[in-house]
Image 1 (cartoon, rainbow, N blue to C red):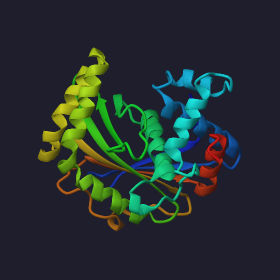
Image 2: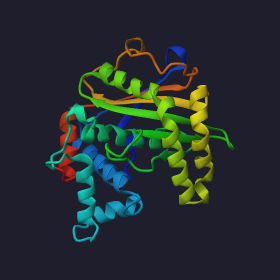
Image 3: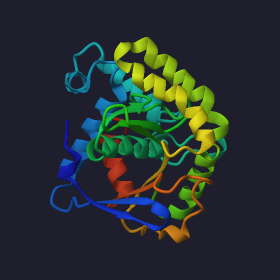
Image 4: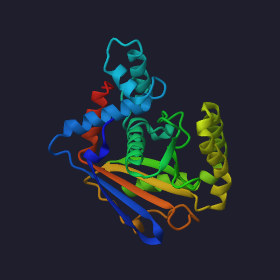
Length: 277
């Protein structure tokens, strides 16, 4: 799989109240197509695994037009990224509450960043990105460091060309609501992990512990805001963002920004290379 470190520069800082801020910048001035190709490979492999095999197997099938799974794979991606007319829905009707393509872009890039940069043995739940009408939360990341020491990050991801503060406000509203809606989500995910095998038992146990810990505002539960944006839209200072989720312990709040040049054009190139346009 492509290595994101070939394309992103990382900057980490600690802001007021112990907030961790990570800023990633992309320089594709020398070879934009190389970055687009890497995104396409990751997106296709990530979305279609494990339905069609592991990621390397998925990518091999995708590049084999005669493979019997190929047509169904493309149908799955079109259903996830396109509207009812078969068009990529970068800007869907907000009344329906679906973000579709642009939101899926942000969620998938979030996974790639967290897989690449955050250290520790981890599990990303759900294991693959979910279409907007089937997902209940963008990402729950469980990270084990030493022995049985763990913490979890509940992520909300957004994508925007200009209005970083606006999409941040929407994300914080969702994060604030987690104590009210995470019990059934987490227990459902735990049951699914249990069914998948013994190797997932400790992750399933963490998921079952999380609802009570969320209500207690335990330091084991962290909250993450991930925003993919056009590089012309400057990252706001923390003081300009809405108040972080209430009662979050110091050091349990993460801000991640990924600045992409010509974000709209870049997305368009990705959708075309995924054969969605």
